[in-house]
Length: 120
Image (cartoon, rainbow, N blue to C red; front, side, top):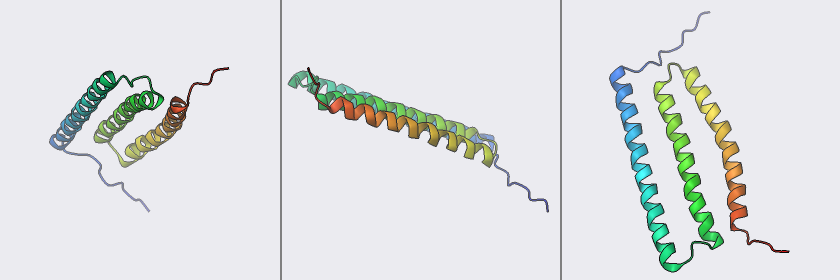
């Protein structure tokens, strides 16, 4: 029995449109994060709260959010270019594995950032 795989190829126009859409979404999210960071820094400067553990953790969480969004957009761009369902599934599997490890490390980092500094 010979089972053929369905075609996964997208027309070039659709692939180009998808790639441009991903880039536009990436640019929009980057702009939102940039504006959020600037607004937060402005408020912290005015209230002199930048060094409080919660504020340090908040600013670090923005950095981590930016890293996670970049990884997601990178995956999306790769998926748009995937030539087969098997390639797409492998990309997704690799992404889940690396993001799970990254999220574990990030959560540990944020928990430690919110802990008060212990002095001996």
